[in-house]
Image (cartoon, rainbow, N blue to C red; front, side, top):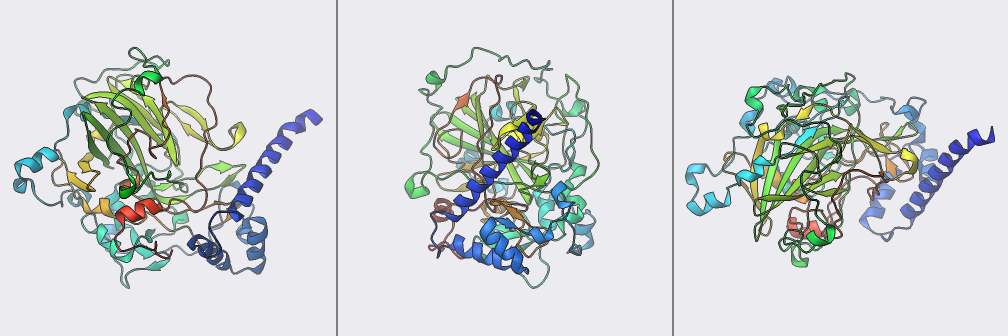
Length: 532
């Protein structure tokens, strides 16, 4: 009997220790009582209408307990709010808008390019030859989305206040005009997210079964992956001394410094229907109606980084003992392939606030193109299918991947080149009319973390049910010297097998915020950092 109780006791003890340490850290941050973080914390707690809730939040770290019910502790919340009416015209609410037209509104037109300008916009063919495939999860509840459609269903807010007195939806060509209102702009959903509006789920964007028009002549069929690599494995000490490991100038102090890793937490489940997918061993990736974004950066000396960005309108946070944390509207995930003189050398996959890097030889491939696995709900990216624990021991908190729908982002993508030293994005020669203004938006691609007065919100040991929407691709350290973000330690794995260890995750709190280094580099006229 006693032996049977040891595991639950150990689990509870571990969780209590983790939550206690998290709360101690929350109350002993370097920020002083007059810092913007401290002021916002006090304001957030004060927003609760319950005195008991405010005291419990302040002294025990359990916030929003008055909203909790038996359903809440099983991953749901009571929906005590009336659903918001979608704003805008019929084209926006009925999904009849011509989304493709938003992606062909860029300037200047190709006929106005000079010869030098054309060179700056060229993307080498080898970038496309090594474009990744992505296995979405077979039971995914919300799928890749189009940022053009996302903008039709969100309204700009300055923190919690609408910026405009009338309904207004910016588009891909004028989104950066919101920077006039500072960096605390949030694209708030027009709908109550717990009403599960269909546009958040993106089910229409599930990759279609590939046909002959989607295939490429050089794609090869794959066999069941057994962890082998297609060539001699590179020794870590060897590639650290090669020219591709450290590339470019990186982010020097006058251009933002070595920036801390950003933290992105994710969203809430939306659709009840599960989809299953059967992948032929010779199938190439299917086409999705949600376009991917390719940003190519020439670092000099033959080093080229190809960033592939994947957008989702909503993410489902993971659960710990049936309590869900980290939901939010909007999500940007990415992978990077680093080339040296046209030869792929390494791959980076984003996972929550950091990720993993692999030698190109080590990753699974179809033909010569890498295969990536997207986790259900969180969309964190992994190199293998299976369970991926992080933060907590015993797999209590983990992502799940499998061989679900095979997505070929190359089949529907908008490509750009980026001069990271001058912060200049250009539409490439492959999609010359693609707009660029959306890239320069300094705000968040989703709602601000809901106040404690909102019945959908709670916080336990510093972890929120709903967190901030993320920042865009411009803030993912595109100028990184190493294939990993942060310009710090970058361990490149040269194999896929072996014991899976629990990954560390530094992301806590209300979600992604702009770093001070990014603020100094990208935000004009905001010397004091602004007031959140």
